[in-house]
Length: 475
Image (cartoon, rainbow, N blue to C red):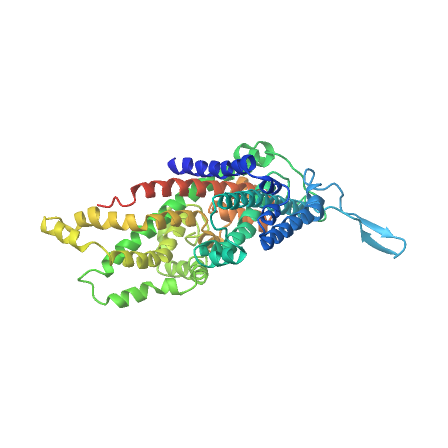
């Protein structure tokens, strides 16, 4: 809560200084509100004045050409449908001057992002001019253009380094995220696919379909509840089993009585060295209905015995093709894939254990379990807490394990799930993938994407806030 208040306070100070510049600034500072290079021109900083003037002119040109063209149709996302018209001059069928809803949405989002960026740049520019004015009135030295450049190479080099990454985040993360949010409020699907068809705004209809639909849309709310529950169960157990399994395996291998430590590490590292998709595809084939594992179990009579006991009803064990069986097998296979990686992290942490505290505890009569519970585990949790949070979020979006193990192997028999293009073993992220790649249902995929983002963001913010509060409290 304190960090939220601090963020709002900083935001308020940002605009407070701008207000002070508008009220107390001289004529050149006030002219900067209209002409971004005016303040620099008045202080004879001609290069800065030219740069800001060209920047403002570029934004105005962009707005009058690109932005206006797309934002004019943003409210409707287009009204002219694509049609083939016979041209009597060329004697050929030609397309009319049709609208493309997705291009209109994309161009509008880019325009809005540019305008928002320009707005903050405009405010920041006014504040810079105001600071120069105050320095000049106090008789202090005002940097020229060359000195400012030198500052961005020396004491403000962090700004130079962060410019490209921030631009990349805006272009490749923020813009697609905004587009996804907007698509969630449209009817963009296989029946409204640009450029041959238009899509339009539908308000909250897609959210209603996902969270409490009725009629034909009830299957989405039915599938969403079950997939969300499985996603959270999977993330919880996949994270904890690999995390504690890696710690225990590291303790076992690095124990004083363990022989051949390097050999054991090398053996377990094979699963990390081999690309994960290769391992998962091989394991999927091993545990398929007609795979080698079922073949061996059938030859030694295990499957026959299970059929006699009523455990299975087929001539194979449905490791990855039946609900329940598939859920358990996915968790077990993930342990095999994920524990060695966690073992590496735990090994690095355990090498820095506070030996003085362990020796003191042993002298005081503490056994191995008490040392592990009160010294080893708190220390490891204190160091790897942030990694544990990110692992949970990563497992919420763990596409590889679920998709590669169940694709072309698992087929749902639940018709309600099938109606919403979902499977019982799907996570939210794999369901989203099927909706987009197999069924072109971008509207519902966008809603699910928003849900995933909210779950991950809330969980991350809450956990990191608690971790930061307890930082340094290890004992």
